[in-house]
Length: 155
Image (cartoon, rainbow, N blue to C red; front, side, top):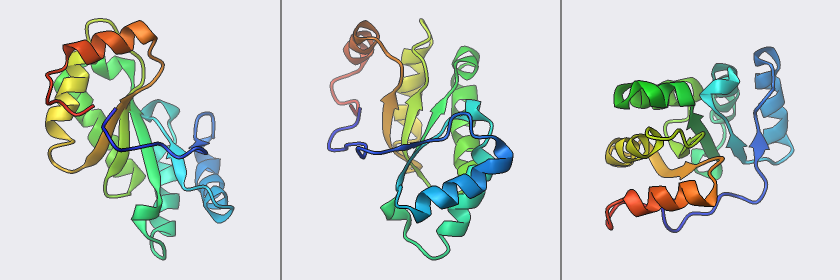
């Protein structure tokens, strides 16, 4: 939702890739030209995906990639510390230095808006993430989020 950013048209989704196949799968995707990757802590393969990124980044530029991850619902329910911990765990596992986009995976009523605000006030400010976003939001969920944000808040 941050301004001046567009997710690449073609993104490689990492859902349902078994951990034992994730590294080879991502390296193959990189070899054939994918540069945008959609991950999530829920997928259970971020460590192995990170191993692939770490290997590839030994000889390639980080700026050529778009790496996204998401915070899962259970972490939203636990509050800000859990949301931030989820972010940091994904960042550590993905071994890519920063995330291009971090998303709220689902709009959990009563929890997604505080989580979004928390992320905007921390990970965007400290440079660990370039943009925030949302996933699986209805138009109504999105409208409620936008209307709850202060005018100067990153969108």
